[in-house]
Amino acid sequence: MTHTYNITNMTCEGCVAKVSHLLKQLPEVTGVTVNLAQGTADVTMSSHISTPKLQEALKDYPKYQLSEKAGHHHMAAAPAPGTDVFGNPVAEPAKSWVQIYRPILLIAGYITVASTIAATAAGAFNGMAFMRVFMAGFFLTFSFFKMLDLRGFAESYAMYDIVAKKIPAWGYIYAFLELGLGLAFATNWQPVFTNAFTAVLMSVSLVGVLQSVLSKKTIRCACLGAVFNLPMSTVTIIEDGLMILMSVAMLAMYL
Image (cartoon, rainbow, N blue to C red; front, side, top):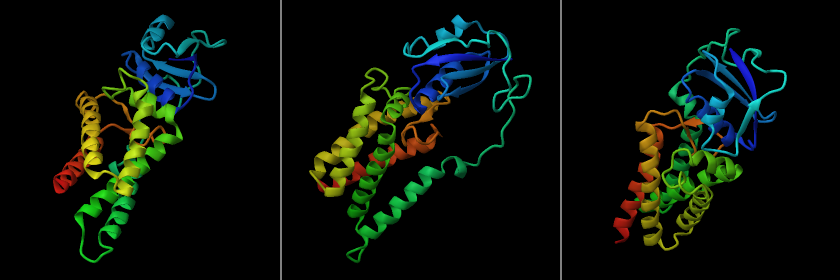
C-alpha cells in the first residue's frame, strides 16, 4: 500500500535524500518517492504505519514536518515509481560499477591528464608537480560542485561526517576549506602548512566515511555535493586515502 504525505521545509536534493533515508529506516517501509517541488512523499509500506510513527522517524530533524495529505487519508495512491499496483518494489535493471561512478571517473581522468601534462612540461616527469596539480584540480573541482548546492551538500555531509553530525555549520566551512586548499595547491602557497593541513582534514573526513561503509548503511556520498547521487563506498575511501597519501608524500619531500 502507498500513502502520500506532506513534508514541509525541504529546500534541496540534500533534503530529499535525507528524508528518504530516514523514512526507509522503518522496517515496514518498502519504498519512498519524494517530490521536492510539491513537498510530498509517497511512502510504500508492507503494513500500515501510523502517522505519528512516521513523524518519529524524522524527529532528529525537526525542520521536516510530516502530515497526512488532504484527499489521501489512509488511501492507496497511484503506484510510485519503482513499485507495482500493489505497492511492491519492482527490481530496476542493475547499473554497472562504471555507470554508477562515471562522474568521478571522468573527473579523475581529466585531472590526471592535466597533471601529467604539467608534470612533463619541463621534459622529465616531475612527481612533485604531478601531485600538486592533481590535488589542486581535485579540490577546486569538488568544491565547485559543492558550491552549486551548498545547503544540500552540508545536509548530506552531516549524515555521516563525525564533525558535521555535531556541528551542522561544518559542512559549509568544509566546502570553503576545499576551495582554499585548491587555490593553495594551485599557487604553491605555504606548501608545508598546506600539505599538513590537508592530511589532517582528510583524515578526519575519512573516519566518517569508514564508519558509514563498514556499517553498510545506504548513504549518499557528498563528495560531489548534492548534484550527483553517488553511493558511499570503497571508492570514497580510496578518494580520501589518496589525498592523505599524496599530502604526506609531498610533506616528506619538503621536509
